[in-house]
Structures are given as C-alpha cells and as structure tokens.
Length: 477
Ligand code: NDP
Image (cartoon, rainbow, N blue to C red; front, side, top):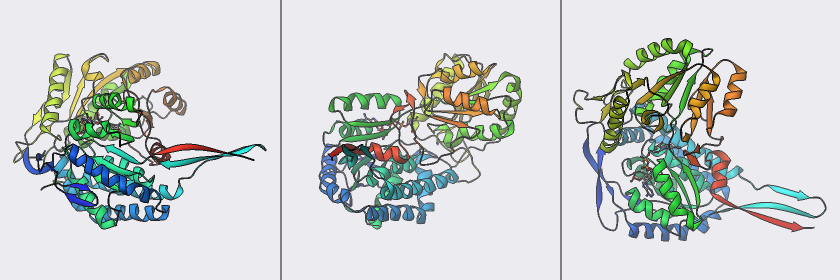
C-alpha cells in the first residue's frame, strides 16, 4: 500500500518522489511505502494552510460542527476497514484496534460539539468597565503524534485544533502512517475545506524537526518520547512557540491490602500488557502491600500465563506484535538490563516466535521482581510488555516508591478506604490518578503529565485553550 501526503485538499506524492518502506510488525515484512517528505512538501502544506486558515476561522461554529461530525460518522462507517489497517500497521490485536477506532470517532464528535460550546469569559468591574476574553485562533498549528495509538492520538490533537479555527499541519509517526492516510480520504469525503488540514508523512528528525523550526507554524502539540520532547522544547523556545508536550511515563499501580484484589488483578493485566505495554499510561511498576504480595503475585502470574500471543488479526490473541524492529530490540535490551541488575523473571523475559509468524516481533509478557527502586528497570520507560513488581509496608513507603522517578504521568490506586484514596490522590505527583480503575477516560477532563512526563494539558476545554490565544478586551463605562 502506498501512502500519500494530503496537501491542499488533495492526495499527493512527495515532491522528491522518495518513499520509506512500511513494515507489518506481525510478519516483519515490508508491505507498503510512506512519503519521505522534506522541506519542499512542508512549504506546500504551509502555503495551503495559510490560504485556508482565515476562511476556516470565520466559518460559523455550526458549520465546523457539521464537518467534524461528518468525519466522525465516516470513521464509524469505515470502522472495520480502519481497525484492520491499524492492526496490520501497528501490530496491535484487531479487537483493540476496533475500540481505538470508536474513540477516534469520539474525539472528532466531542470537539465538534466543543466548537459550538466554547465561549469567552467576561469580568465586570463595578461601575468602571467590563472585560471580556476574546479567544482567537492561533493560525497555522502543528500536530506531531507517535506510533502506539496512531489514529486515537492523531485525532485527539487534530480535532480540537480544527474546532478552534486553526489550519493544521500534522505528521503521524512514519512507523504507523496508514490510518492517517485513510483519514485524509475521509476528510475529502466529509467536505473539509481544502488546506484546512494537511498531513505530511515522513521522518521525525527530518520533516518533523522542520515543522518545529518553521516560523510559520505558531504552536506545536506533540506526543512522544521525553528525549524527543526535550529536543523539541529547546528548538521551539527561542521562537516563543506555544508548546504542548505529552511525554513518557513510568506509572505506578499500587494495590493496598484493603482492595478488591480480584478486580485489581483483572485490571492490572490490562494496565500492564494492553497494546503490548505500548501505552504511555500503562502501569509498568506494580507496588503491592507486603501482606498480600504473595497472593497477588501468584494470581497475576496465573492470569498472565493465560494470555495468548500471536497474529494480531486473530481475535483470540490478547498480545500482538511490537511496533518495529528497533523498538523490539530496545525492549529486548531492557530484558538483558533487568537480568544484569539481578531481576527475577516470574513470566516471559524473552522473544516469542508464533508458528507462521516467526519473523514478526513478539515479546512474552514479562513480570520481574526483586529489583530496587534505583535501577534502570525501575527508572526508565521501557514501553513494552514488561512490568516490575515491588512490595511496601506503609502508605508513606508506597507514596515514596510511586513518586520516586523523574516521570509523573499517571498513577493507579487500589483501596476500599476512602480516606486513603483521597490522601494519596492529593499526594501522588502525577497529572492523572485513577482510583479502583485504569484508563477510564472522560474526554472533558484535563489530560497530561507532570515532571518529565510533559508540559501543559490537553482534553476538553484545556485543548481548546491551548489551540487559541486569549486576548483581554477592556471596555470602560
Ligand atoms: P518519538 O518521540 O520517537 O516520536 C513521536 C513523534 O515525533 C513521531 O511522529 C516522530 O517521528 C516525531 N519526531 C521524532 N523526532 C522529532 C524531531 N526532532 N522533531 C519533530 N518530530 C520528531 O516517540 P515514539 O513514536 O517512539 O512514541 C513513544 C513515546 O510516546 C513513549 O515515550 C510514550 O510514553 C510517549 N507517549 C506519550 C503519551 C502521553 O500522552 N503522554 C501518549 C502516548 C505515547 P518518527 O516516528 O518519524 O521518529
């Protein structure tokens, strides 16, 4: 399959006519190609975005709503085609891809309604003046997204950027470009005006970097790794670009003795290994109270050994393939690191070669114990099907272990004690705290991390605020 750029409302080849190979993770084989776009493609996208932006900004909210809603409806209509494509391109099980396509449509539908609801605040000064906040579109904005939840995260950025009246230049990861390409076809069908959304495919350090450097792009919303985020911030800061950075995590999943243990374990299997552990919100550090440690460990190992690994298109498989060969090698290298650090492997710890898919990139779900907080396994984001399990005695110790990394994205707490839940929720140094659940998402809530997990929040009105400039207008009486 040949992916094309989407510029000026048309599907176009890259100017250089150069393409990169696109691999199918489940087989390790090349099955398509993706534009290796460069500055020339970016300039074309900018010309088209600039010429479309003002008209789009001035388009009545109801019309913006209709178009964004039409995109959502078309994703729903083509859900199965999108899900199969996402699974093939990313390596995730197709049942999971189906859920993510539902959420991708919801992203457009949610921000379609937000376009209608978003309004300015006003502040009256007694007998003196009235202030109102004019929230204006930024102009042309850039959205850069990663490979783990390709359309889900791509649409999470594009939808609010468009709802706020901006023209968008977006770059999906070159590892997983296909659903973004299918989305461009849908945008044409839905009647999105030409140039309002431009999708430029290619390499992050090449065309992605050019987007961040380009003075014509006034804001960047980025989701990806912390190292890339640091580099982006350093590039964008001297230009005073508006930046939203959603970065990595090393999330604690804390089970107290008073928790509903069976429910906690059931969810922990997902929180640890869903999407091969390639979700920034996965709980990669499992912290368990000493009094239930052996019970939790035994039950969890039991459940994890039942997980079937293999062909993502087979609905019976719970674990699919790792997204790319470099990432597969990176995760395997962390298994070596954990061994050298003295970790004890309770499950997994190795690559898997399912029959008929021997050349694909599969890793067994891995649980490691016996490692201290201060080691690479417990400090660095592995972003694969690998968790580390540790025990604690007191609430204070649990809190110190949980907060003891450079990351601050999401924490999960399992307890039936309301006081403990509230106290920990306030003390955990994370952007998101789930109590007795994981990945339960309300799209109105602020989403993002603290510390090295990012800067800024997306979601709901936070995203609309990011993608607009507030202007104070003060009218004297
Ligand atoms: P990367 O940081 O490698 O890449 C993310 C995106 O940025 C890709 O499109 C990439 O392109 C692009 N990119 C890379 N280098 C540059 C550059 N110099 N300038 C501009 N763009 C660039 O992350 P991954 O794709 O490996 O994604 C995994 C990471 O994303 C994990 O750390 C994970 O935790 C994080 N993540 C965070 C989430 C959050 O909400 N906090 C949610 C999901 C993931 P290319 O693919 O071509 O390199």
